[in-house]
Each structure stands twice: as structure tokens, then as C-alpha cells.
Length: 293
Image 1 (cartoon, rainbow, N blue to C red):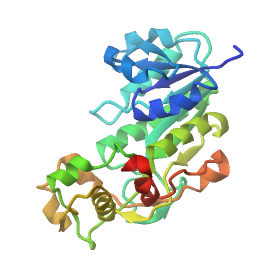
Image 2 (image 1 turned 180 degrees about the vertical axis):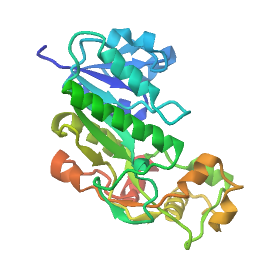
Image 3 (image 1 turned 90 degrees about the vertical axis):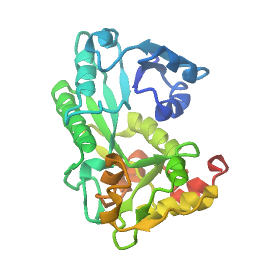
Image 4 (image 1 turned 90 degrees about the horizontal axis):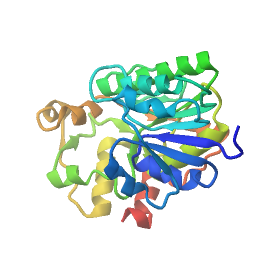
């Protein structure tokens, strides 16, 4: 094993870059990128880029045999209920040589489905309802089976709505899209992008094999209240409130699907097992931070 471990980041979005700024101080970091124009966003992060497309298994041949640790942040494809991208990635790792010792995967709290507003933790059964959540559920199962059979420590991080100063529902507020009336409103959950990135880094060191973690903050908010908070912070009008029966024609299918699931999620394992102390324990704290102005 080399003196400096080689870490592969799969999925080159915002969370990947936030995590890379810390990870590059501890590992020799590589990032799998699909498009050449992605390279500019990685400038200055001390990360080596590898061209490859998770939708094209043949393009992933260079991933075999040298990865010590992996951080898997790539979403599934947009169709179906199976995550072929994760299957292609694992097949590439298995083409020859050694396998990663540890793999951290960022999934979604959507795998729990609708819990009727109940307070849940990681022991709650997973009952995904949307196609989006079913694909993530499939990825979790695929990774768990692969890790157990190949003796790779797989750690699952389940994230809810991710926000930051540049990840707020501005377009929705500008469009005046409605939220639910109080009687119909659902509970949502959130995590600041910086705290999710920090959880990814800690999981690479401290996450137990086969363990799952809810990476959520400590807010206890209904969805409409979240939109009101953002609107007040940014100076927009609060969204109008309508009954659920009236929203289906006003929202996209994806937007509407979030109105059908309600859950409040505990995050006890984050502190007890990963030792993560949230920078932004509530969305109010995150929105009040200068970077969120």
C-alpha cells in the first residue's frame, strides 16, 4: 500500500468540490469527470482528473486495481428503478487488481418513503415510493451486497434537501409557486452543503462497515415554513398556500412528489459515531450565515 492513499471521487458536483478541499490535504485525490468543461471548476483543488462516463462502462477501464478509498456522489440515471451507473462503477473496480478498502455512498432520505410525519432514525424500514428514491434504494442494496461479498467497507450517508447560499429555491419563489396550507403541509429535512461534505470526509475514517447515517440537521420544519424562511431572508414574497388537491396542476411531477412524503429524521449517529458537530445545526443558522446572504 502506498504511503499516501489514493482516493477516487465519483460525481464531480458541488459536494465533491467542497469535500475535495479538505481531502486533498490527506490523500492523493482523483476525480472522475465526464466532460472536459468540468475541469475548470476543479482548478486549485489539487485533484487529478480522470475522464470517464458512468453511463459508458467501457470508459471506466482505468479505474481497476489502484483505488484505496472511494467517495461515490454520482446520482443514478434519470429513468428506471435500477441504478446502472453504480453497477458500472463496481464492475470497473472488479476488473483486476485490488479493490477499494472503503467506499462511502451518498444516498437520500427519500428511501424511507412517506412516514406520516413520524420521527424516525436509521432503523426505520425503507419504503421508497418515487422512481427517484427507488433508484437510490437499488444503489444501496447493490453496494451493500457488493461490499459484503468483496470484503469492502461500504458506508451509506442518507441526505435530505441540500442547501447553501447558492442552493436555495430562488426560482420557485420568483415564479410564485404555491406551498401547502398548514393542514396539508408535510415535514421536510435539510442539511447544509458544507456539513454534508464534512460528513463525507469523516465517514471515510470513522464509518463502520455496512453502517448507514442520516445526514440531516436538527431543524423541525414543515415544507411551507422552509419556503417562508428563505423568502424572508432573500426579500421575496412568501409563496401562496393551497390545499394539496389544488397543487398537482401547478407543480411539476417531481415538485409534487415531494408534497406526498412527510418525515422527521433523527441524526444521533452523526455525533455519536462520526463525531460530526454541525456547523449549521438549523436552517435558520445556515440562512443567517453571511455566505447565505
